[in-house]
Image (tube, rainbow, N blue to C red; front, side, top):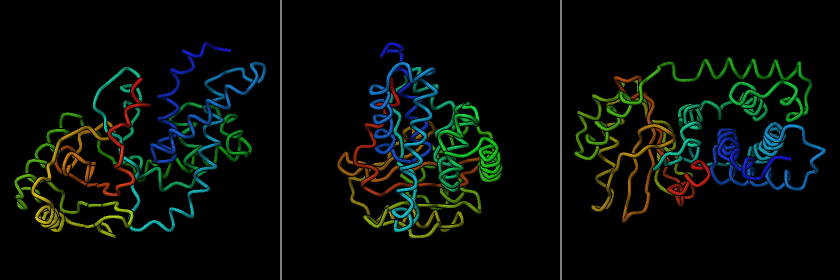
Length: 293
């Protein structure tokens, strides 16, 4: 069996897989830890490739979690968004993981897939697992897995943002938006938004949030200014990397109040995704612990 140090280097990769599947940092941490515990308990003769074994076990654990979470998601108040990851420093493992896209926009697309589609697609198309491994994880034939992954791939391509935007262009646009919001300039906010822009907020029924998506540049701009007027005077906005892209966080007394992600085409903001649910924000500043090696 491989040295423990070598195996631990797989942790960021496994966390990235679990986070994409579950959309929850805490859930992802739990299943990664469970996969490692099972690896420690397994005999060396049972494992030919430790990485393939861990990925397969992790995927099966995620599938079980996803099935258990279905009822909970149905009862969720308002739109559901993944827990945000705040990135405050970089390491090679972190950089590699973000390079394969942990953007909120893609995570939202993945959430539209069924549990089996999501697991199969991520295992095969993102983490290069063979169909034999996918079949073991899903408990299906390889032929069935090929069809399932093909169907999921088509849906992702159809729903995934179509614009390839440089990090610099995205960051500049988001920085201008943050400044416009700070200055409560509704006209400038609207100018930075596509006319058919969409705003989605996730409060989970535990804080104020729009229960339905807000559509249109002017409506979003008016809402942003209106909401700011109701917040405490010590509310502060900050530009920070969220899920590997420039994003925005709002603080009250140094406590995170909201985390906002953006999808852009480099010229205008196409969608705004804001997490307000305090359960998802309570310790998200510590999300780098597993992603940073």
